Length: 93
Image (cartoon, rainbow, N blue to C red; front, side, top):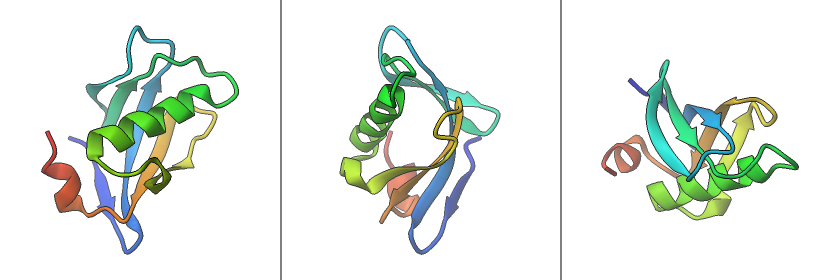
């Protein structure tokens, strides 16, 4: 089960990223975090940019609203979608 945390700024959740995948997609859940495959390599922030693009598209928010709060150089990251509510994110399939 994905653990979401909602506060005044938005919704925060954990992701586990798998770089250099054949395509970018949300591949399920891994220990309470989204397991996300990205086609980009983990070089010079390319995988992070692809992660932000994918999450913005999936949750229908501008890319500027999606930020990596921690784990910028790690496979395990904490992401916040600024201005989002828990109801908005959990209603999207």
